[in-house]
View (cartoon, rainbow, N blue to C red):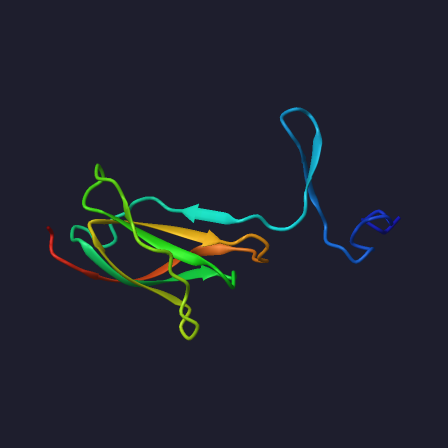
Length: 133
């Protein structure tokens, strides 16, 4: 009576618990298997208001070992985003190095499929102010 888990629980079989949910067509689905590729994109933001900013690098606060980070720049909110190439982190510092100048910046993190990771907490940016134009 003191045991909270049923004896056929995956915890007693050396496995991890699984997450399951009902789909919109009322079928039970288990979320298991290899991790899929992930793309996380933030909003366009002004890093150093009211000035433009020159982004020299960024550290991604994550436990993922393999990823690429892209930076997009815009001269204003109405302009299309100009995306740079994906950059992998430098092994010694874990920083992604950029040369991105703009009024607004947007970042896109891409983690490949099959990689084991648990969280992405944010970005630690290395940026300096530029002029207002």
